Length: 192
Image (cartoon, rainbow, N blue to C red; front, side, top):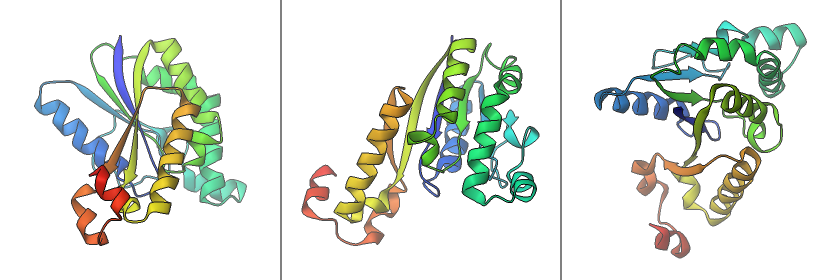
């Protein structure tokens, strides 16, 4: 049985930074860890990838070849990954013996509450490789500075949780910067 995290969240919420930090932490406590980059738009990785989707498909190639923008290109890449999930399974096979897995997914939120391709990839991996995965949903703490944005973030988290049907942990990222966003409203102050 292999355990891991599916790291998701809006663009800029800190998914890659989280994966880098979590992998360093796990190594420090003596765990073998493998980071799997499934974001074809992420070309500046601070960690060493055990598996990189760019070995299968590149967003820049998809955008040029199919005249797609970044959002359409990401959906195409996730569709392509779903159709070629056996490639990912073969790359993960040597790691599932003794590694903790961190999946760094793209920040396009539609992939996790609207489209089913990422969900199907995760379901196939769970079934075929007997994985135990938890979704880690990062939300930038600046959304707490405005009640409307905060409620929107909660609804996005709930929708994503229901769509993915995985154990789900919401994490406020960049919390060290929360004071720079100004005074929090009364309802949000109670939460902290």
